[in-house]
Length: 398
Image 1 (cartoon, one colour):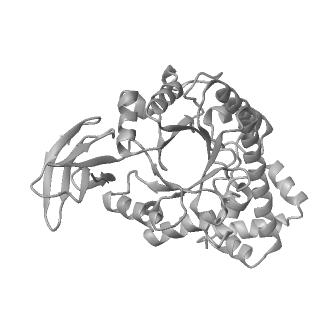
Image 2 (cartoon, rainbow, N blue to C red):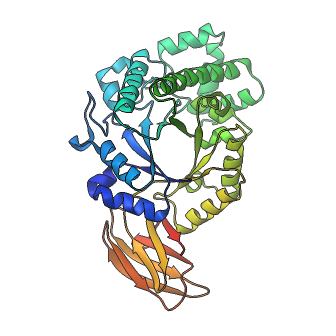
Image 3 (cartoon, one colour):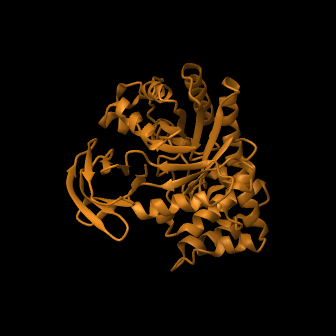
């Protein structure tokens, strides 16, 4: 499998057919198409605001299937600014700042029912190949502290005075030590461990409700989940406390795991990619490794990450985040063809051979492609959107 996460904006900037032609050319087998985003708008007709007033999901699905590409409807599950603004009590509560973000509590019954209805109605109308759940987690340990949450924690036997002391030392000390509550978890502290168990239970209940809604309409559906990479580590303190997202809990619900192993964002290299991929596979779920192909990455990091993931035996493949954020170069007999699906002009490209290189100065506008001739065999390339600002480039050999 070769996947890409795709935002609807790609189809707003370019023709749908051109977007999916590029996907087929890159060898993409699976597109994870953003169907309900952070703002709460949808890419298909629903009772709520639709992106650009277009049935973008229908367009994407038709274009994908025409090219033999599977399409998964991607839902940002626990983030929905529209729903939170219309239902303020549904918002996830910050430890100090209240409901200050467009994040919905995974415990909110009204929101769970809304998401179940949205998923079910979409599946009855669109023959998508899968449903992809993102944000099935708490976003940070500082969130999940409403009065109702605190009562639940206390009912589970948690000493909130002790936990408040750990939270203060970890996040609000002068300076914060960033480790107190995580160290307590590792040392078996009852209250820290129990807090993680309650938050894990919240996330599991939410994920189970959405998964059952999907499978209740289509039993043949592929259910996939985007996961924070820390859950693949042996040390679960960070993932269990911050996110309540435990891979073992979710393994019985999903057909496919996508750990978001964005190496440059974490300041890591190939060894870390292998650790995340291998750690995810331990849970017995087919694994499509998420690779950083957006700003902050580069051609070299993209190549390295793909190669590192490929060294892990048994993975299902890789998934690039995201289509529309990286350039591509295709080797041909006379050099290469450079394509630019991004929103910015490519200012230049450096083409590398065996000990030689050539520079091509653009611009290559958004949505354009250009053939670049070389007098040597291209082995790699780098692309720049400004002087010295490199973006990821996928190099596709012949």
